[in-house]
Image 1 (cartoon, helix red, strand yellow):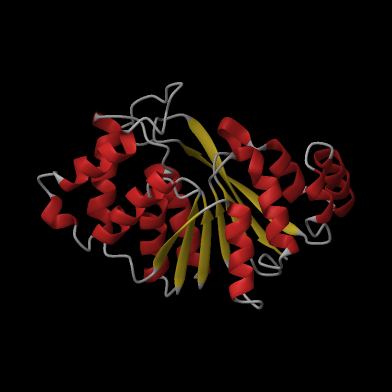
Image 2 (image 1 turned 120 degrees about the vertical axis):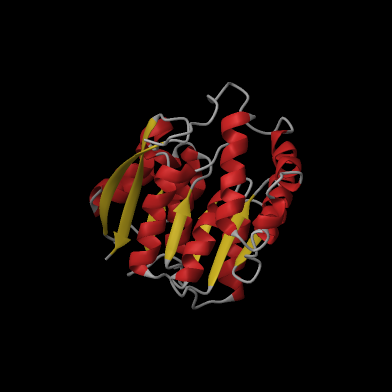
Length: 256
């Protein structure tokens, strides 16, 4: 459990101006001079805002440590996250990636305001050399990543955006061969609020995946053309806690 919990998540939990308020809070903080080129100080200030001022949709210290340990153990060269929000995970994991000898952390965020705040905080933390924020829908951004380098493989994919989009975006990464043997996929919030279709897919057999794809395609026909059901994953659930103290879990899946 974490010592200082975030304020509780309410019905409106983002996009109401709190993101810009966070940036202002950081820039006017008494310890701001200590934050420059210091990721841990920036993260501490963000957590302080979440505890004192307003809830933020961050991975937080507890689950963040789980993912950071995976980065340290696996030493990925390229890490991509879907759903960057205000840059908390990009700062935490970008720093861990750099310490592990990694080369690039790409954070995909659809909201321009959130991406702007993230870019500012990442710059303060001194991570511009390794972290890149890209603005736009994940589908278009992933396709662009593939077009830029036809041989590129994502070593570690972190899913932390809309939970219902997890499975479709994983299938797109498979179809584009961005995810293949040796890739690691880490998904946040698989317990709360949960991502049941994603877990069924990544834990399932080829036949189970094909059945699920057909079921999902009734709502989104493009899914029939996506995915590589022959890929096998070895998955493990890491139990943890949200910054609010609510129990949650992170699913780590290694593509065989």
